[in-house]
Amino acid sequence: MSNTIFLNGPVGKIEVVVDVPQDKPKGFAIVCHPHPLQGGTPHHKVPALLATILAERGCVVYRPFFRGAGQSEGIHNEGFGETDDILAVIEYARSQHPDLPFYAAGFSFGAHVMAKAYDALTDRPLQMVLCGLPTATVQGLRHYVTPDLKGDILLIHGEADEVTLLSDAIKWAQPQKHAITVFPGANHFFTGYLKQMRVTISRFFTM
Image 1 (cartoon, rainbow, N blue to C red):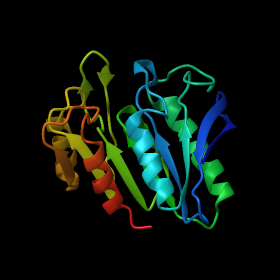
Image 2 (image 1 turned 60 degrees about the horizontal axis):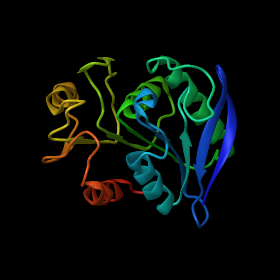
Image 3 (image 1 turned 30 degrees about the vertical axis):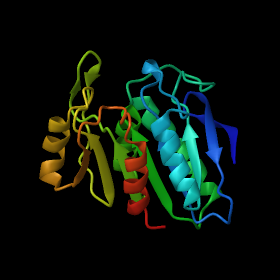
């Protein structure tokens, strides 16, 4: 079951889709969507899949709209202001579920924002999934500086990702010794690979 709430963020209201599990919650999760200026919303197939998996496993899932998308106020801020917004959503979710474990996920631009939020937190998610994480220059868009991360993190990337190159992801992950799950032939949007993603992500989460 899903519903919509509105939270007060640093520059105004944040529209958030909330997915509620059928049984008593075992945790809560934040899922971030792809680039809003490229049509990204919480209803995109990848964040929707992430939310479905987490809700099926007992999490209350919060899927915020980034600035300027949906009914969220503010204008796009290249991931900087968006990180502040996600931290505000995390703070709210934690206040609603103080005794439950925290999980996180993001796709593309949303993976970048979640990575930055993760880096800023002291009380970090138990587990995090980042799909199509931008770690260098995205042609025609911008250069992404992704912080170094430590923890229980699943990185998923398409071998034929034409937006966030696999070679850049490997270069970023190598010094941190992060494993990357690569889907051979998959593009940035994992077209035709949602079933494989579901299996991989479901196996990762241990709640």
